Length: 524
Image 1 (cartoon, rainbow, N blue to C red):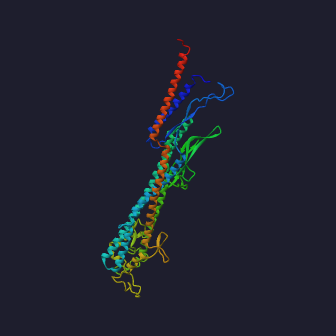
Image 2: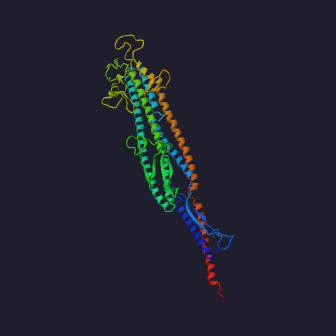
Image 3: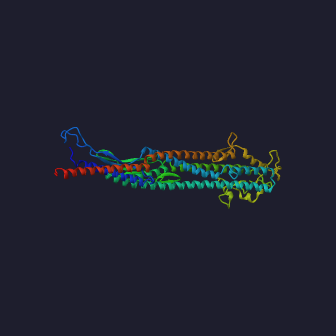
């Protein structure tokens, strides 16, 4: 049977366990508003009873008495499965947020429908040619054609410039994100080392693990990754040493890995909006693919904006080439054919040119893009050179110019105006007339701007829905890992009362011993 001193150690352990609970509660309360902090709880367990079962244990048989409580660990209250869910859905949210942000900028570039968009300017452009067909001799009408064409060309130029700016901004943003990723990876590697050392010493680095998990949460919005625990062999068993490895996206490359029991990072880089390992210094062929995250969203947006720019270039080139093909067949106000200098680049034959060299606009009439399309400066300076005239199909005269070419002839202007109603198909980067179906030039523009509107709306819808899902998962996480001040106050009172009771037990045991030592055997 245990002696009188037996209960002191039991009560002492009770006081120590409740004291640790009080300290943990204070830590929780102090970090109630700390970003990334996880609520901690002391895990208590009963100690083995006395005596240990045996054939000759003291005090006879049929009884055991408890020896108190032990605080085994201070545990973080986290749900790893929920953490994985949140990181996955946060990455998807980051992807759609980036797509929505970029597409909203592209919508502003095109600004459709509006009174100042390309669609309205094209309608005014065709209407000006219609009017010229009716008033071919009118200098003001010819000036109107040039000015509306110039406004249309400038709108093309401005839209293309803005799209190129967005593309460059995306590329720079990806580079900044890559720098942030490398910085986070270095911090994770540093924390890995500290956590490993503390765990090796037998302690639990909860706060450092919180910092590492917070970094992983931030990283999850930028890229998708897989976390793998690093294990070491101890006495023939695989044991988690506290370090983690971070594998990138859909690849086999590690952003953070463990080599020789030490964490190291493998930096990544960006080239033309694509991600490669920094060690890929020669060909940049091993692109790292991602399925979600801000990087993925920026890459998708980069591709989308390049597609819209390509469509705009095709539209500008198709419009220019089809008009130029008819314009060079026509006659100016003086009855002269504008392509009279056969075999050389004529000064007036092309209505639209690629104005890459203002001093010599005619050396670049090929490869017209939305960025460089312009009205021929020579025609701007002399509107009488617009080839509005064309021989009447019924004119069989052999004179030069044909007899039907009179100052009021606007048949070529009519032919150009009628291009608005013809059908075209996309071929070799331009719009070519088709007799077996296709779309008009105006509809070609409306089609891809309509797709832009649908894509932007879808991105906005997905961002909203994904935000609701992430909020819901975050609330579930907070219910497990977050600090509730009301709950902590209740725990504090619970630990306080238990501590006081254990202290009272020691006082009682002291009084019992005092009676035995100082009171027994005393006669009066």
